[in-house]
Amino acid sequence: MTTIQTWANEEAGQTQNNAELMANDDLGNIPLVVLASSAGNNQWRQVQQMMAGLSSNSRFEIVPESDHPDIVIGSVLDVIGSVRTGTRLN
Image (cartoon, rainbow, N blue to C red; front, side):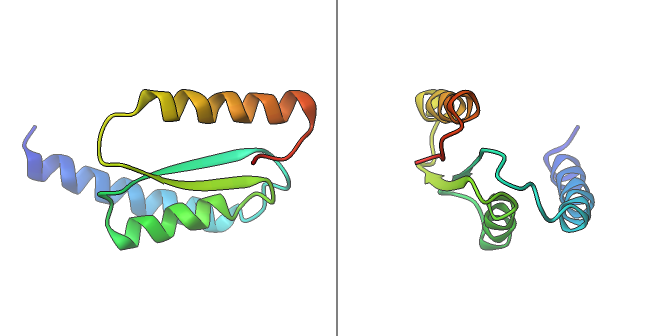
């Protein structure tokens, strides 16, 4: 698959996902962490911020443009902790 085809497929998926997000506009207080790349474009970042806004118990975090598995692992553990204890995300 070419880079252009990969990009086109990703864009098509974003459009479909955006429609699904708009249809489901309330996740209540389900813990949700949205991690965004610092290299992302503004349009995609707006969508990611919208996703974070779907829950009243959410966190939106921009991470550096590199592979940081510790940030992902920490965020997953934060969500698990919030679910288990019923506390809000920090």
